Length: 598
Image (cartoon, rainbow, N blue to C red; front, side, top):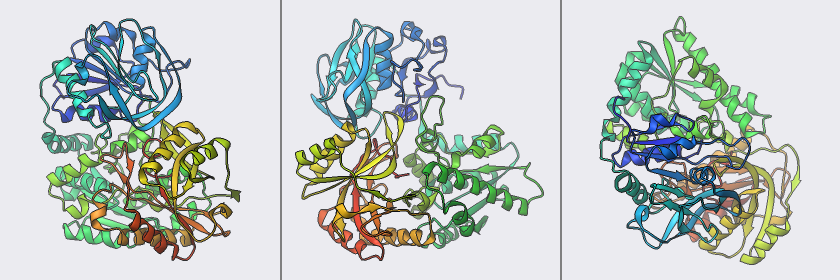
């Protein structure tokens, strides 16, 4: 675009970097993201600079750093999380590993001059994700906020207009986060509104025409909101004769998914989509795969193989075609999509072959800078039906990453620290020797699951989850035992693969959950993954894990709280499925646990 950005966000590789820019754009101010190591001379004409979070520690020898000359640009600066730590470190203060890590909600106590906290209460709910913290402030700075576990949670040098926040104002779980950003960009930086997100459909369509440059688009679609919106935008921009869709039934879809998708396309008059049954191919390639990263990479490669084969059937060559994908921003950032960001999990649309094709200009992704809620609004603005726009998010690899696998028998474990926490809250606890993916301090974790049991309320379960994941580095996810056929301490993890029988059981469990939970309760739930874990009292017994979350964009999430009476009945019904030995309920926020377990 030709317009100049009023606010520049410097990307230190944080999971929420683009979310910062998007929140500021939502306030009507044009914002751009640039590399952390950009030339400070490029920043002198802007009105404000934001330093994003990042996955590193500033005191490490190889830590990435912004050029210290930015502090001489005479431009207001806001550092968030790692951004605050860079400010402190570069200006002569001290940062070190926290005594207690903070992942999730915390109470911020505001003190001193209002300024960036103008209009806030003395106690505010904020969202933390850090393992390091500021110990000693640089000269000229003062503390303007603290939490119970973080004595220096917000800082300011009022004369130089430099501010730092250990928490994340850009995520929805920081209650007054938008007010804080508004104070910074308007009151401190003096910005004026110059950005209208309503122009985005036209901008996207023009970009599609520019990127395709006369070529046609062969689109991989799942029937979900992202690929459906991206496919429709391409069709609007280029005409249906230049766009072809491909839906691949991998065998890892939800129960009756393919029929539902075909019917949805039919209702909106879409007839340029081919459906391919590739179940046998996917099961053959994945049956002996345990590692979640390997699963995702194989699935991504298989999608490309099938796409290329189908494309060769309908054309004489691939030179006049590009591959279209419904990739959205969380896919790219969790896959390590910016220069300094950490790999959390490789999404199927970010495997090596896709990256190579992107480099060759053979991929088009109209929505790669957008979040799920923004995509829904785009879909509504182009009049897609709510049956498509309102569909629950579902991972591209499908149930393959919701069906956990193991190669050997493992017994439940205990540690002294975990038992101390259990005694503190008057619950029982067990460490399950199976790993799940998490995101902690903007980096990837692959750690174990703790299961707790006891007659405790949601509030206490939340406290347990936060304390466990903040204080036990070997655990990144906590679940509550809802129901069990047998004495849980007798359970063990057993060898299990990706088989049709296990996927069918998971499909039945998923379908039962969705039929049982009322529409009224689903209004508070953004996504409800159902996971199968090879954990039981028998050698082939399974555990069903329920993972309902509340979120807006998928970058952060809180576990949803279903009515306990409803949950009790649901647990009993799931135990009636042949092969299910227990039911657990994920009580982990994101961070530290990703929404999907793999």
